[in-house]
Image (cartoon, rainbow, N blue to C red):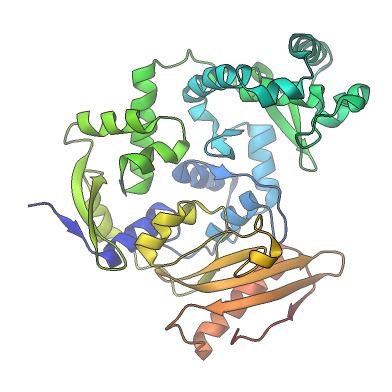
Amino acid sequence: MTDRLSNPDLRRLFLERHELGVSPSGPLTRDGLDALIERLGFVQVDTISTLEQAHHHILFTRANGYRKPLLKYLLEKRRSLFEHWTHDASIIPTRFYPYWKRRFRRAAARITDNRHWAERFNGRQDEVLDGIRRRVTENGSVSSRDVTSDDTEERSAWWGWTPSKTALEFLWHTGEFAVAGRRGFAKIYDLAHRVIPAEHHDPEPDHETTVDWMCRQAIARLGVASPREIAAFFNAVSLAEAEAWCAAAPPETLRRIEIEHADGSLREVWARPDVLDLAAAAPEPPARVRFLSPFDPMIRERDRTLRLFGFDYRFEAFVPAAKRVWGYYVLPMLERDRLIGRIELKAHRDQGVLEVRGFWLEPGIRPAKARMARVEAEIERWRVFTGLESVQWSVGTGQ
């Protein structure tokens, strides 16, 4: 008989695996931040700063002692983290770097055959790449702002990229360059061997080793998953590779288990062999309310969020305003092990104001006095973190 995880146990396990099972209060050291990001596997990077940029938001949600200089130090001084791609641009532990070499090779093949990338080079790919390689090798790191002045008349239609900007991104995607730092939000590029510490310049692990490592890391952080979810975690193996890995995994690596969804339906998935012990040991999540980034790994897979938590979330920043149901930058609210509603916050940095533009509780969730006090406490934490002076509610709590 297949073991089963009830939905409450599954939610508790899922939150614990995503570092949301305990209170985020307390101090955070550089080592603590390194360890947190390694436990998560990666942290997505995004430029939207309606409230706060995604990477800072994700980390502050899990550690209220988080401060931005901590991350900058690990990326640019300690070099224990590097920037590259998972399903999107991400911050990744540098000890994972050897397993990204397969991605570099695949990116080179994909980009070389991609018509849109070719158009961005305006027919001068080899010439521009050689010129950028030579400039960085001889003169050191550069940003796109440093190299585009000579070819601004050649901007392509694709986000206005110039051939030089395209070359920097090509060389970063394919592993010749690495991100050495940022100036504002603009990436600064340098030769990868100058950025990535020497101990991580190991030869590329073979194909089988890479697939096994990627799948093991994914199931370790998810606890339970389908092959599709395993493949999607780093977006570095194919669905077929994940399916084959699951089918061939020995019992000490993987097992089958039945999970209960929020609607009571059952599904059989793969799990860590110790999943029942992990679920039993997972703590009861704290009562405090947390506002999740739209890019938070816990809610990244929207269909999974609906299945596990009964919460239908869609990010509407890229939806035309007239077609939005909720708003431009609406955040799910997590309380204990439930997603209880949504809030829309906007930081008016020029005015020193954190505006509450929208607030919605899920059906059946009451605006009880204790709950609203927890919501207001979380708003205040965000006011302090964003360095704003006051909070302004533009809507009532009954919206």
